[in-house]
Image 1 (tube, rainbow, N blue to C red):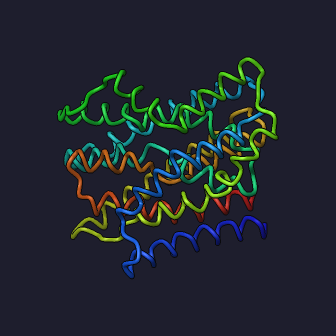
Image 2: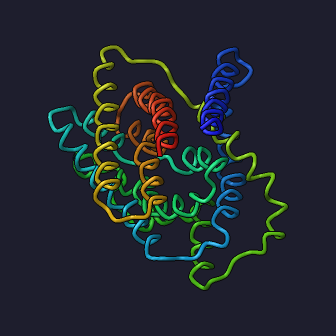
Length: 302
């Protein structure tokens, strides 16, 4: 319990440090683009490579991949229903913010220090999740809103995925696991410093991108989105925990996933749809703090 609390506290400390340095002008939000690239191209792939190495595939991995895809689809259409009376932009925000999971930049850094055995399972869920957040959800939102800018172009979605180093590592390690292959641990020693830096850089990047400006008259919308996000997470978590015959470790991992923050890609896509940048940024920023608290509680209880 102490380890978990200290881990959560360290994440909060890094978030506040990033916010402080941005506030006093030493760093700026645009600096997050650099640290984000370091995470995407260096530290996160190294973390995945080390965490997934020696994984032996079983049916549960394929189930998790499917759940990553299906849960997103379910939540996108629930978002459409919940926001059916809202404006096109706000309905799109519901669809984006009720679905999508920030696994690579939040969940993996969160669990890697005290629960590294969870990384292979998180990775498999994220493969299905990534198929949605990289463009499929955006296509569904645009088609439902009548504002077709991108549409469902499978080639573009896979192009985005395969230009994403973490996803490429997922696929590479998945193929190795199919053939029962893995890297000798000694070979991975040179990249361990990169993996060790992932939590710091990932959380620091999130802090740099955080926004706490509330557009006038939008507080109710933000609260409704957050309430629905975590209410639906609670329902999904309850269904998994009480009704699905999964091993305890899988149930715990799925609970952590369902309560993890919103996807940064969805924030960008919501802005492209016409939503206010401050509104989209505030919603996802608040979800970071809420998720950190709830995920810490889940780990402590379970």
